[in-house]
Image (cartoon, rainbow, N blue to C red; front, side, top):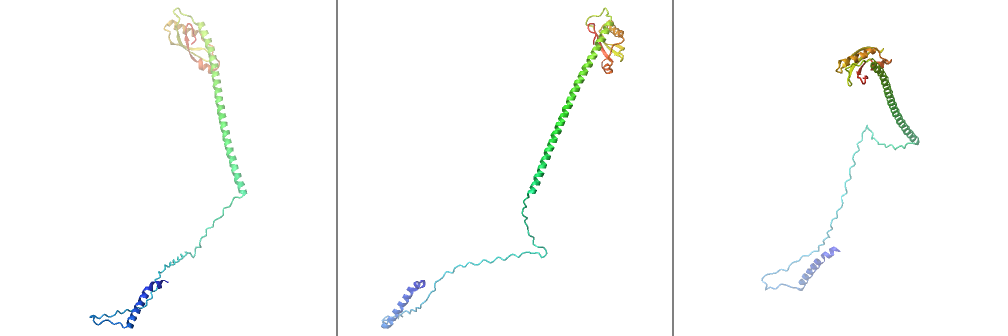
Length: 247
């Protein structure tokens, strides 16, 4: 045991001292007188002291103070709101069919609109092509008519040329290369209204002979079509030359 081992030697020492003291008293031991100084024997007072072992105090964990519950704030008038989570409702088969039907109708409507737009574009292109074709045909007709009118006018010019050549009396001073430009005016019946020299040949006798040849003709054959007459024979230039009297 711990306390016995700790105080064994002090206890033996104390007992030994007591035994020695008792033995001296019993044997009659006394100090010698010649000693000038008196030496008193030491008095040893011994007592048994019992020491309790020191026990280290163990740390005791202090209990944690319990947290005070927070007071719940409750309103006397407003009840506490409870959040209710509604479960997801899966669409039924009828709803799926309705959705698919609506999508199918939307797709069909989109296709119908696209087809209508395509048809409209084709119609516009066809109309443009038809208009272009009509314009081309009209131009061709106009060109043909213009060519026809020009041919008709040319045939009447040849008649005028032949009639003036027959009525021309060539003066002795006329030479090849001479020419006189005349302005001739007619009425729809073909009769000559006026003749004037616009560009002289430089020879007065030649200019006068050309003017007299037109006046002697008096009347030319002209187209009955008033439009052709107005365009080509109402007023025209006549280039008078010995080799070619046609303007």
